[in-house]
Amino acid sequence: MASKSKSKRFVSDAALQALVKFGPQLDVLKQAQRQATSQYSSQVAQADAGRIGVQQSVDAAVPQVARIYDDAGLDAARTSNTLIGHDLAGLSGVADSIKAGAAAEAAAMGGRLGVAKASALTDLADRRVAAASGAVTAKRQAQSSLVDNLAKILQSQQDLTGQKGTFEASALNDLIADDADRTQKTALNSADNSQSERNSLRSAGIDPDTGAPIPGGKLDPAAKKPKPKYASTDKHIEYASDIHQIASIATKYKGKASREQIVERLQLGRPQETLYVNENGDKVPEANKKDKGVQKVTRPSIPAFPADIRMAAALDVALDGHLSRKTQKELQRQHFKVKDLNLPTYGQWRAQNPPVSKKTRVAVKNAADTVQSLFGG
Picture (cartoon, helix red, strand yellow):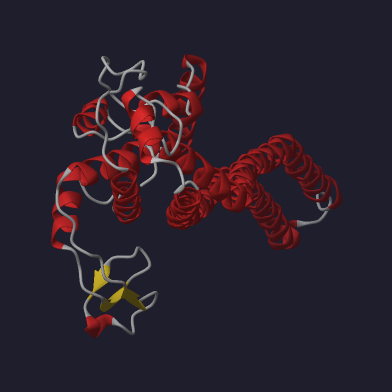
């Protein structure tokens, strides 16, 4: 069996091999996450720019259109006055019907110009509102696309993390097996040492096989300083694998169920099932399978998990992004190292997710208030 110092070195070597193998793929997913966020910001900016451009054009066109119709009305009035007041004025009483018809036509023309003006101005106002509505729709579509992309990226990251953990465990087992072979060969090569020499070394507090101080022996500087006993490397690997598996499943329920409800579902598990869902992902009766947007899906089975410290740690990571202080203390109490479990602490999570500044929060609130004022809440 490898010594504690060797086991620690083997864990580090296995982790390094896993990082070399899976690190580039994880970097690609991080880059994809940054690109999705950047694309969202660009789409929002384009929506705002389009809205502002249309509304500015409409605002500039309104006075011009009004002036055009007003000028047309004045011209029509002048023409009518000239016709009735001058050209038809000299006619006798037999032309009264002609005069009346001309007056009626002039009045009708003024009415038509008024209706056309109102229609044109209403159309411009509708375009202004449509520009604002279109910008909101574009932003919502951009946000929906961002959420979908981030969800896919997160799922890929979790899947890749699980593969990385499996590879790391396999690499660790290979390193331990190779070390056991070397140790056996060393023991066979040194079999010619006399038993008396080996006994002398042991009496002096030295391990005759490794040449290192015997733990608790005369030369062990830590003999009188007992170190806390931690769970074995295999136990750390087992718990890390279970926690990441539970977290991957719990993430799918985030935002859809409370923590207590998620615990109940994880304890019960779920067999594989085929069902019909609508566009929102909600289950619908089979009788509605031909409705618009309804799709047939097969949900994979979910194993049942005990509600122990592994589930608590997995839910912390899946729902909050980091271990709670309570869970971290409980893991330590049960002789687990958080670092060897490869789980994020609150400090690590906060370093990667700094708090939003007050200035940013105020800007977001002002933008929301503006949208509400434009569209009536």
